[in-house]
Length: 160
Image (cartoon, rainbow, N blue to C red; front, side, top):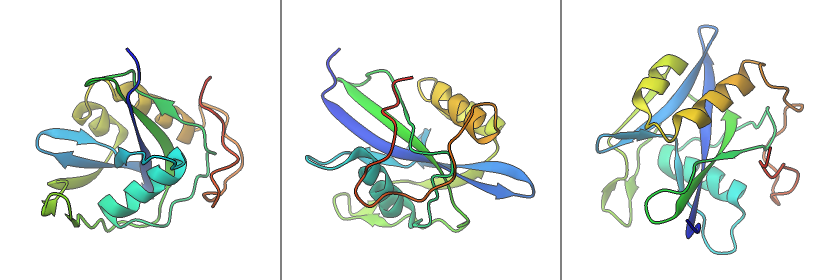
């Protein structure tokens, strides 16, 4: 299936009582990480950062595990979702009203454990969560911590 649409998002995590918590957003009955469509000419990483800010109000993302990413297989008429991993210290999430929809894009958010995230996410996203969990818990080797590049350079292509 040819990829017709690329969306980009961030698996946002934070430490709470010594454990990693994952930010999930719910639209209708579907839980996912913050993500959205990459606009024409937009760098996917910058699109992912923009979507997190637009959907949650979170701006303090630290890409401490680098800029590697994973993508879902094509779904829904060729859409592919690309996910990066970043840490935040922000606990408060704001679900703003979408100008296009006239209401919030998401109905609810939760900071959840890895186990709860596995239970709530759709099967196509669970392998991405598993990769991110291995990365943040040290089971995969990660590069030194860094903040988001302003020009979108300096990340791997996610092809491993």
